[in-house]
Length: 479
Ligand code: NCD
Image (cartoon, rainbow, N blue to C red; front, side, top):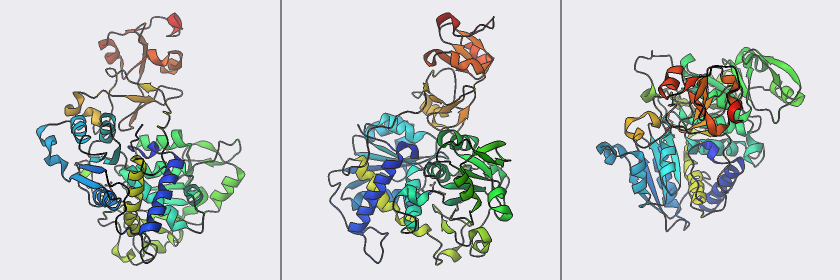
């Protein structure tokens, strides 16, 4: 059974660790001591394999490092550098493009402006698909390079494994957190490996979208803590996300931000209070191509040597997925704290390792990961609220049906399986009785297979469902 990497969550912690061990081995075999981060020469690992790159958005690093990685593995590459100039221009759907491409190659790397496009490719291809960035959604392989950089920049001080290296690091994610796909995937991974995340958006409307914030809390157990409680006034951020090792009963710090009592062990609270500064500052550019046309210009923050003189940043290493525009000064290029070019160089060994693992040329990946949430796939009752979602595009709607993960507890909140945007339907109904109600807190009394969700009453009525007349539980007739 082959695997895809569409989200960073398509790899378990152990699999990420294994991929990094493979990358370590490639570097130790193929890099020179003068440039220990740079692969040279050509191995005989993937000689019989072809990688196809389908890029529907501009790219330098990601496409070239994927292609370089495949060539360094001894494999071959076919590339549609500007996939917009392919049959897509003639109206071909993503599903058809990948069903054709799968016969020309052994692994597909796709970048696309629509959120969820890589999931569609993965659903329709019978070879591994790697997401090289889908709109503002995710960019899992950039995250692998970022994690590898974080891990490597810590050695030998913090330990060899990713968890040992990342646990309790304080990492600022700065810039356009709303549209930046790199920071979305990275935030999920940092939470998983126990690093502390300090979101520092360029302006208020560049904060993490609700679904990202919510996922940090629901999927990884992150807890938002008011920054001034731990770092004093020195950091111009409101909130810091901490992932407790396990839920604790003790509750001492109260977070103004979350308005909840934070349940951290004494040890974790002590560790929080002893944070002296930021270990890594991850800068990102304004994603101008995804910004609304009527959005006001903002004073975008710039990271430079002067900025790093501020107390919390004195010992911060600076990362950036690149390309930079104005937000990262050239005066840091020769500063040992600037690790962004090394981060870009790691794109090759890390992607070599991932390709080799996906093609089963190196052991490292297990069977498919277990689905965490029940799936809701009554295609005709809900649509994704995100206009950039692949399921909202007319060309793809001819064959795609929306699907959602049911993640709600109190109420039936659902998350799009393509772009991860969430919504809370206001009507619940039962497929058998076709009786609906507005009181959604009773949703768990309906069997998942019978559950029908609607955004509003009009949709329910249009679908032929009628309001319940009594207060009897919805499922009473067939419980
Ligand atoms: C990033 C991307 O495409 O999301 N670039 C990259 O892959 N290294 C970041 C960006 O374009 O700002």
